[in-house]
Image 1: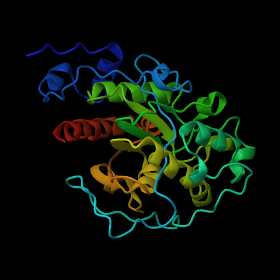
Image 2 (image 1 turned 60 degrees about the horizontal axis):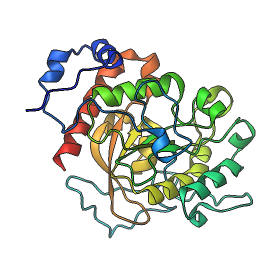
Image 3 (image 1 turned 45 degrees about the vertical axis):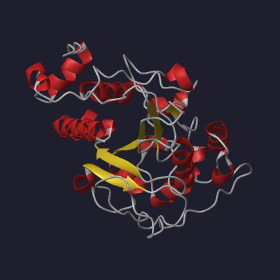
Length: 294
């Protein structure tokens, strides 16, 4: 029996804050991986986020194309449910800018360039930089999708910077996710609005084609949706976050096999609502067990 890796100070602090300790953690079943290391940004993409410690790399993701997923397509992954397009978002408008449309982007580099030039919604006039995404681009094990870029993301052009990124890295490491070094990070909405206001239905509809194309190009094994906006957009539902937390749910891409989806709180919410951190821990521990069981 191989020895367990020692927890780092940041992981111990995270567990202590949510009321857990190393004795509780030791009782959990092995996930087949030692203390998970975050994705190495330099390994795959130059845009990887600069997070503290072993921060996971992340980037934009592409979802199913406009319209309701064909009813005839049945998920093959055990326990996955059928999904429908998000209410009110089934027909996102085509990009009204010069340059490549999402479906015309042959790879992530082309898609990143197109996102950076996008002027489809009013957010493009308020952003400092678009934030397409970053991380492991060669079929990552996890595609992690947040709601929208934070303040540090907006100035760097990279997802999950600053406190949000550090908290996300600690969460993934403490949960001991298998293959935690294979991560791509992105957001549903690629640009930050002034004041960080919540994305409107129009904002989400404008960005969904980019996300859908990213998912097709990335072909992740799992999607981790952080927060209500991300969960609703990826799964295709109007249920609230409490009804969606955990999983597995399912995303049916335009091309390829259905992808299992797991849902938990977004780091920005946990930074202001510490009581939710225990819920996030349970969600991620469930994901680790689900990944191991496949």
